[in-house]
Length: 464
Figure 1 (cartoon, rainbow, N blue to C red):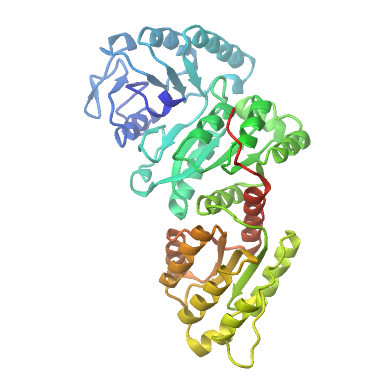
Figure 2: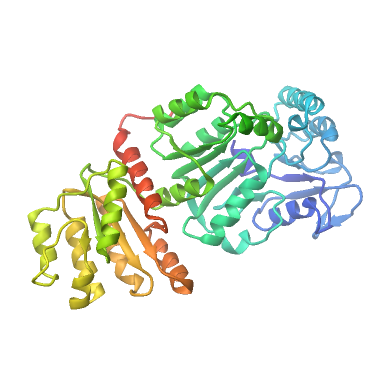
């Protein structure tokens, strides 16, 4: 798969200098990050974006690894034959008009796959948005936005998305909201050749990827998919669509996918340690949480630090619903907390700190309480409630260091309004503490994280 992500030379079949067309944006995006040779192909132009433009593939003076195809579907067989003479290893087909449109398109897609197999060329797509790499800044896609150039920061979260426009939507939503940096974004479309199982294996071995999310309408080579999922220590989060009869029918017309039996698929995924989710925001929330969580060392209970007694009670209810126990704080921990509490107040879990804050100040109280709780052997995780209008987020720096050193997951539930809220959320997540606006979603993530980190033993696992 690596020649797709790090090719030696790229030809853009269907390049144009018209900024209203996708062929322009493919070239523009490539030039925004890729440092190798780029060969626009279109007989109508002598140059595009400062690059020589070639009338056909035969005119390109060099061999190259990758072609990006963005002309009508009917020309693909000829393009594959021409690419073979240039020793092309892969073609990303971003055009539509193949199996998703019916029998004639399916026959064309099968013909193209046969030709590609004959010439040992891998096909990515068709009917897709291509790929993006946050570390190399390689963007091989007709995305119409340049925002990725300023917003995208290299990270550890990688996505495989079967829907083209959804992958672009995912990316822009993630970049706009912040809190999760991107390793790779892969849009696979009809996946006539390259599929999610191959990409899962590639990402499971990728040193720049720590967590993998997949939106799938169908599953190719499910046995191998499960083997890889069981063998890797990286969290794998799957949103599987086509669960209903009408959804399965829509998947067939979207990417020509046979959705399969939902109950069997979900059971198999769960047995392989895959985390399944039900909507797009849940998927991105879990990906964001896992990208900031290093592990869970022991199985104890969760501590809650709240500025509100009511908030602590509701959170305890959510923990109960998720079958997560409250941590029984040790006598030493309670004694340490008591030192910053009013004399009339006995600490307990959930820990309502507001009366102590009014007495001793927010930073002193939070630091003392959090330090005691995080060093309690009976605590395996922490939920901390924060109000964006009443604190300096810098006071959380010690907690950010402790959570990774002690391998105890920490999540924050943040409330507030306006710019104060947005700034505080950004600053907290830059410290590596995932912020949730919905308490229930935060607890759901914590349950998934504990199940993942405590439910498997990785010492003898390797991808076969």
